[in-house]
Length: 132
Ligand SMILES: [Zn+2]
Image 1 (cartoon, rainbow, N blue to C red):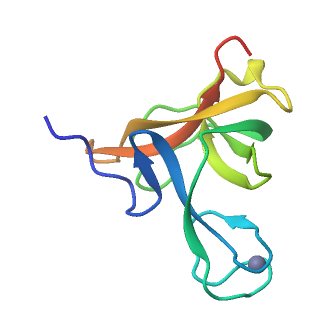
Image 2 (image 1 turned 180 degrees about the horizontal axis):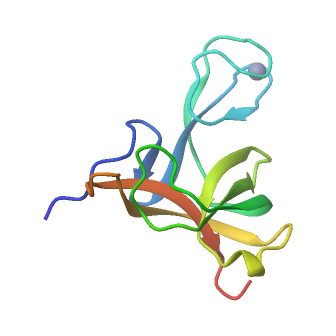
């Protein structure tokens, strides 16, 4: 069986799970998704980098109604994880939000979700580190 296609091309790698971002040759900041021109300082020539897989929970909320194109279960967690190098990424969250706390260690994983017609896609999310 073939794996489901990614929700969008060029956002992540699956084995091992990593986000596909870029790093600026002038200011050194990372960005996600990947940019050719740095969103922080405007310099050209950003290089592709793999980001993750670890970070810390920075903000969170609960999505209670399905966004357009999504056919999976609700509610689900959604928020921001700060990666180890300081970049904050918007992400699905795999945790009971009663267990959410600022700074909780999280790790990246690739998961399958359903579109509104039942078709399968893969996307990224962050889950709590075991034992955290
Ligand atoms: Zn820059």
